[in-house]
Amino acid sequence: MKQTLDTRQINAFVDGELGLESQLEIERHMRLDADLRERVEGARQLRSAVREHAEYHEMPSALRERLELLAEPKAQKPAASPRAAALVERWWGWRPAAASLALVAIGALAMNLATLQASRNDRLLDEVVSSHVRSTLGQHLVDVASSDHHTVKPWLSSKLDFSPPVNELHLPDCEFLGGRVDYLDGRPVAALVYRKGRHIVNAFVWPGTARDSKADFSTERGFQTARWSQGAMTHWVVSDVNREEFDAIVRAIQSAESAK
Amino acid sequence: MGDDENRRRFVQLALPHAGAAYNLARWLTQNEQDAQDVVQEAMMRALRYMGKFHGDNARPWLLQIVRHACFSWLKENRPADRAFLDDDDDSLQEIAAPASDEPPSIALRNAERVEINQAIAALPVAYREVLVLRELEDLSYTDIARIAEIPVGTVMSRLSRARSLMRTALMPGARPVLRTVPRAVNGGNAP
Image 1 (cartoon, rainbow over the protein chains, first blue to last red):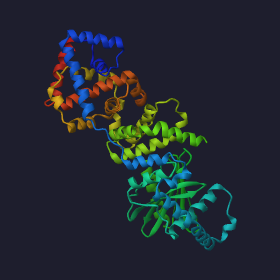
Image 2 (image 1 turned 135 degrees about the vertical axis):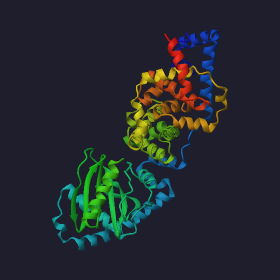
Image 3 (image 1 turned 180 degrees about the horizontal axis):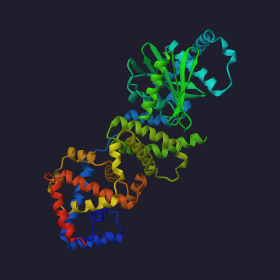
Image 4 (image 1 turned 90 degrees about the vertical axis):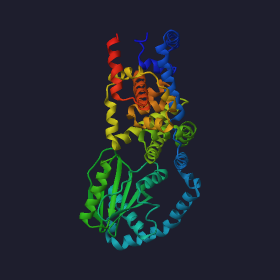
């Protein structure tokens, strides 16, 4: 018996995972076999030592709160925490002013708005640039100001119905300022904000098609923009940096993303 | 309506197991912040797929999602750790057998809390996960098999091997050299 009983069976016996018949059979053998008794005793000691001493990691309360927030309908979210409510209130309170301000800016910048095309990307391009302009004109550049993606990502995830990729960019003279929730293409999106030199860069992310695509660059009202799909996310980046620096930023975002 | 129903079931069925989800993620990623990110992502996924869950015990279902998220994370961030999974389980069983023939040590009972936690943390991830699911979550072999997406026989092999490694790590003076001796003797006697 001893030789046919491998360690796996002894472990399963100690765990009570053998069928009743096999459990009883091993018990019978144990009465006769001192060596088997010793092996079973050894397995039991280890089992109870691990159960007694292994640390059961308690969930941090911040995570628990975020998870509970997940379960609440989006419309009731502001009520969940005073801070979130204040943020939303500020955002909405500030929006009409920002919208009119942006309209003035758009009107001044682009005389050819009348030729605005109906296609989705052109409309989006317009939305993205407007959103970028709004963010740089108003006070509302970031909702969460942190250069640490470990702080920004969970915050954004808790406000959105997806978890955006958040990367710090390792470029000279480039700083990660934080993130905010913005509204594009008829849905809430994540906006990650970087500063390159004196220029602000907005990188928008939201769930998109699964198929990756190359960056499509274009210039709109003097702003550099790029859009692409990566990791099932739609990415739009916009800034007023020069073209070379903009290319470097887009490449850095893409490679940070694909390096994951 | 469908969304409300999903959320209601999420709160009722999945959320109560968030603690288990975190403990598993924390043991697999070995890092508090990463565990939080992984759990958050997994819970969002659980909410999205709540409609696909049928049954009343969502714990194995949720832990399977969390485990999956952890391994995606490991694949991206700790590719070396995960490579171990490709090992053949039959060979593990062979290696596992001899270690059990070492006499159980009194020293084991005195093993410090710290040592035990370090020994678990040092286990290759494929063994760590079955041990955590068994000893900390007290799950049955069947549930572990489902969560780790392996046959029950493989659960037995890995658990057995995990415990052998634990015993070796916890026993003072137990070195690989010592282990080869009983192994050779046993090999000669085995049928």
